[in-house]
Image (cartoon, rainbow, N blue to C red):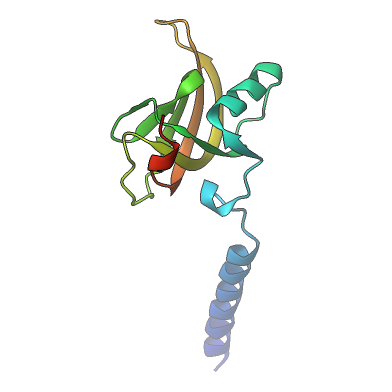
Length: 134
């Protein structure tokens, strides 16, 4: 009987621990967090010219796609957005879209000399909108 109570209490404590962890855990994905910036890619690049942001900040960017690859897109001003591996949607290769991701910092491309702004683990919020195309 004593062994059964110890085993049962072990499982109860384990279940409560897992439940509390899920309740108080820090959101890991960009979709689970509130963005600290919402706006155009040009606006975000302009802000980064004047001040330095902490990496890991969640941003929501809306703009026209400049170029696209299978798992990433680029906006104007050297902003490169990489798709989160768990995002099941197919991203468009053209058009005006809204994405939410995690700011990873700035870097200088050694070959072209351009400043690149990296946003990773992004999710597509709004697919291409034809009325916003130029």
